[in-house]
Image (cartoon, rainbow, N blue to C red):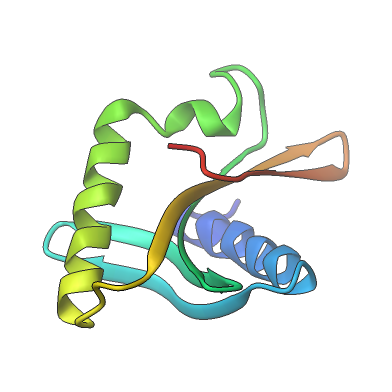
Length: 117
């Protein structure tokens, strides 16, 4: 049985592969600022994208993207502000995406929600 952290790393790896195939440039994984973390920081053209990855093996508790609650969104936004501050970025368009991964019936389905919040 995989640990929660290991499952998250596997999901993030799938998300990175997916995004790179779509032409995104991955800048950083697991960016931490104060008490927050952003799974993936990437560029989509001229837009800086902060990406949250959620993966589930069951629909028992809803879709993976349902786990990105208003509280989680606020924490991601605050961490993104920290990223922009630390990297002296004030002239770039930014957005927040969610990658939802379903591991069901020996299939893996990836949904990319662009501009999720």
